[in-house]
Image (cartoon, rainbow, N blue to C red; front, side, top):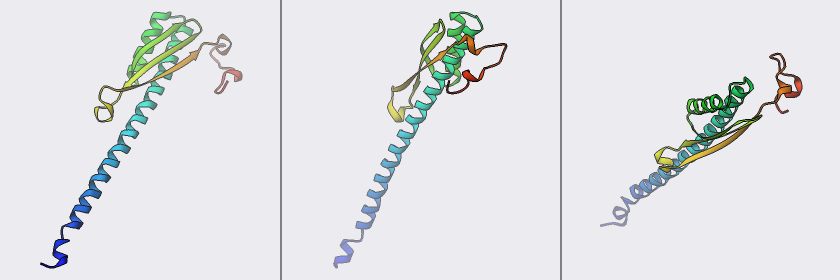
Length: 135
């Protein structure tokens, strides 16, 4: 038996090892990507829920209607409303989004958002310049 015949299967083993390492790296990147997407979805749902509650309060509908609006809006955005302080001139909503099983079985990400009701920003159905984005 010559030296080359003993090394004939070595390339197959090395290629298999490279494939396995590559598969684990791809799975890790996918898990991080899914978790980041869930975090973004939670932040969006929290923002939308806080705004929906603030909208109901601004319209004079009351805290119970504001809470229901926040709950429905969170659910429509793929999240579950954990809490909502839906009274006064500010609303604070907290939501959670469950992570898929391959990312973390039973794990979830949460996000909080606040919306402020400003009477000086609701004038005859128009929004003054001082109330625009960033103000």
